[in-house]
Length: 255
Length: 343
Image 1 (cartoon, each protein chain N blue to C red):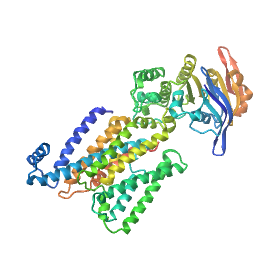
Image 2 (image 1 turned 90 degrees about the vertical axis):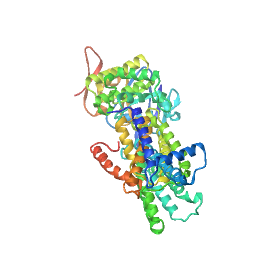
Image 3 (image 1 turned 90 degrees about the horizontal axis):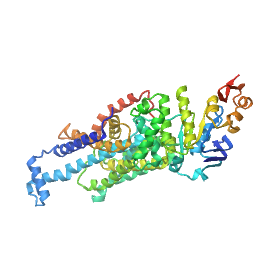
Image 4 (image 1 turned 45 degrees about the horizontal axis):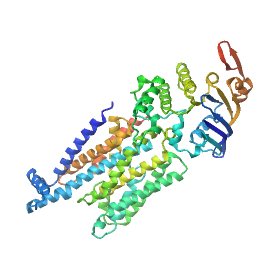
């Protein structure tokens, strides 16, 4: 679906991401983990075209991403950013409906199908009761669900989420990550998520990429990647990885 | 609290109609209903106008009706562009003059007024023409400098606007110092006090203003998406750079055309979009057309006040809008204290 080959990104002379290659595959949830400053958000911004690559290539279904227009890219890839700017004066419904922008005409008039998709996204994220409220009046967690609903309404084969659970309580965190995983299982959506919580990463990822200083340290299933050696090397904190009956994925704790 | 946009639109249309009648009716020379009725009859039937009605006919069709239409167009243009600029810069204090439209137009007008042009059709048009041209040039320079400054996005544009505005204002002052003639006219123009005679100015500005307003309306959905920031807008499929160029182009065209004849009229572009936003919400597909109607209504009202407040003399309409606008501006500033002004 989206493949990165030898991607490097510099901010000025400073290399932030170096020679990274991986594929975001259909029907899989891929999770990027790594300490602050390891290049997670930069990789996402490289994929979305917000920053220029200083080397390598990113291809969307074999097409070079640099050759695609914003509109073509938006039909292919939706993004839930880390910190979403939400303006005054727009209702939850209006905000979610913005997700349909790549399919709309110049004046943004919604068709019956657009409305159906918007309502579906609103129901899936459990914000139906909030739909008439001003988005700025909502709590951080509610706002995050609105932005996720907007990405769902965008109806793309690839979805990228940058720390989507930062403002959420445990209930909504599990809810959103389950929703995204079901999306990849049922619709075959390719998902890339940046997460800080290693246990959530272990539970929801099909594949994990560990980043260290702009390089890939390890890539594979949670069982393969979440080892004490890898995690101690990345976070510089002694870590313990163990198993618990009834939980199929590894559990990670600092020692 | 949001009101229905269509209801507000109808209310504003009625207001514009009433204020237009008032604008035509009120002035230093009183008009009789029967006289006006007779003139309209002759105009409609195409008969020869009796000599005793010629003076009134001139007041109506050369002075008052063109002036009223010009005020209507100017108000619509300024408020509509104000809404667009506030949306583009995501700054509630932005107005059409932020990126040099007004200072450029002032310089053009002052240069034109310092020259004794031949009293031909083109000679009398030199003030608006130069105001228009220098205004567009100034905005172009601001846009270029904003781009080469290396600061991306709106901040570069605002900084370059501040710098260029200061520079052009200084040049205008120097020009006024060295050209002793027509200082009073220049000041009057800068206060929005230029009088419009006949239909020629209207014929010239109408295409620019209409194209400008329609262009801004067509970009209104993109402006909505831009409110979520440039990166999110791009992720939602909007070409941010092209949209920004389009909005600056149409809003500048509209504003420059309007102020080149009417002079610099402040605060309309600031106040009206805010009031409309408070009443109907942030959707630019409603804000742009309703701001145009609101601006037309407000400027017609200000013009009537400017004509009656010290009658038989009249004030430049820009003074009335400033008197109404300055307290509003302070209120807005106070309202935004503690909130982000530039998001």
